[in-house]
Image (tube, rainbow, N blue to C red; front, top):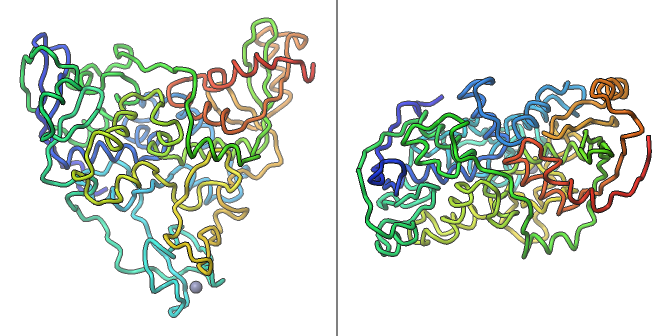
Length: 472
Ligand SMILES: [Zn+2]
């Protein structure tokens, strides 16, 4: 690690008279940049950094994503095409890895990106330089000219603090309890009104120091609580005492995301075992295509989740960070002109996502439209031998429990489990569900806040179509 553990931010916090709630906080752009960097974290990286920081036992469960991550981590390497693609899966890199390394405090804990370029010194691609026409794989990728990309690209910035990564470094910001961010110099009265502060019930001003541990607590609280800043400042860190975020059913998708659906025939079959008498989901079964889909969820950064779900996940604070970038922070406060667009779309780095992905995720691509320029998809890696986003080897059926734990399906243990729960076979029904964009988005949304993501995402749909397909 770098010296990030020693970095401290000073944040002014205003509490109510009763000292039971944060009215707002005031901080500089270095601190706000760290908050914005939450949006760049892939979901799998969030699970990983929380596990690393709090320890396996103490880390709070992040919806069903922690159990998804742990299940895949425990899955024997023989189920993956290569050892390397499992490693990539468990250590996903976000779209802003380079930028995050320049932050005063980088919580993403990613390896310094090594860039490799075509072995052929005069290959035209080597003249362009990072991030284009360079491979981010730690192993060999193939250049579009057909030669291996084995030559280390030079001139890449390593750890070097740079101010103004996301926001301009002279700016100061007002931050609400649930992480809405306003530039400090906008209309003060309007800002207070937006924050719901009508009567000036200001009680106490505190100066609070945030370091690495405190930022991790704030990240953790923003995944669990409606009032992360209050919970942090007032030391309510015990999971049971929090105003917990709950799963709210229903997804909203529109515009480009919806357009992508109508053009897509991508569909995956999921077989769901239901107890007839109770309508309870017992578990699901699927082949490697569905498991690849689950793997892909871990690679999606919060910013891309927000894009797909139109800013309506169940994580209020993360939604608010996103909305702050989209609406509250004027472009003039952002470090560069294109930072807003990049943060809004949070394109995924090349490699993680299959071309048959049911979610319309956007992958980083070349900024050229010229047909003679090869598309990024041409790059392939020895880690993804069967193509991008192809993690699971198959052909095996996998069992997926309600909290998205994946294990190889075993008929014998299924019978034993039913027997243990006193469920007669005659009470069990297997239903087939087609997983398309809508179902995929529902699973993505439910996975953030629900420990029973499959039930919450699919049960309504399942009950509507409850026609026996196959009695056991
Ligand atoms: Zn080449």
